[in-house]
Image 1 (cartoon, rainbow, N blue to C red):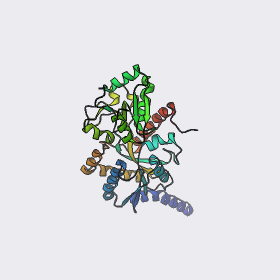
Image 2: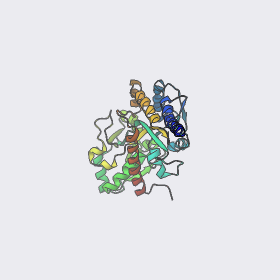
Image 3: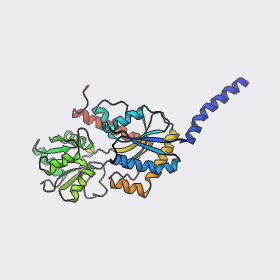
Image 4: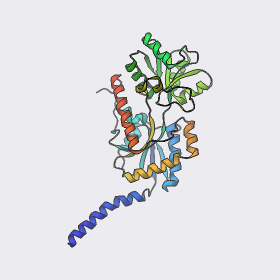
Length: 323
């Protein structure tokens, strides 16, 4: 009986220790890897989130920029980190939902990570020049239907969100639009303003300066909701193109093996940090703010649905990496 009691006592200790450690978390500095260079929206907003979370966690959080591969470099580092909550990653969701189809990456987008919380959303749209004959997105689509290949569409890179939007629409609507990739948003908009392409799909940060000066017209928001400060611009779902809506997000991830209680402690701290006037103002300025950020299983489900949807379009359009 003494031996049995000793065994049971040891088992009880082993069961309880992880819970104690999780309750005591954190006891040292946390490192936040950032998959973008300094100054990008992901960088600035994630730094604000962790700055506010410090007072709720009682420990420092040190941001470290590890740009490269659209976040793939930083994600690879996180995948090889210990699942104890002391190494995290701030990155845009295409790193998980698109990049693995387009290139070989050193991580599995869902087996290697624990989604903690969303800290923003992409806001993108399709624009034309202000003097364009196309007054609506329906006008553009119908013209393309009647004039195959006569409409050109600039994108800031292969496989970006606005690229997948148009590939999806072309499949569903049986229209032929010439996709013209550029190395970033600036050259894409420059080509549009110069009259070299018909339309362009980019983020709000890329087109808003030109919208303010009256040089471009926004035809449609490519998410499932309207852009908050452009309420007169319809969302693509409202026009009957629901399958062509792509909502990508900014997320904070932890490595696999992170205890649920630790993940919850991080989520709570980050959520409180985002629920401040300071963060709201900053994220709104970058057109990233989200009223009710996803977290935990709901965030994982959103990412997995995006991964499946993006993969279908990438494979149909033959954009994926060579086997």
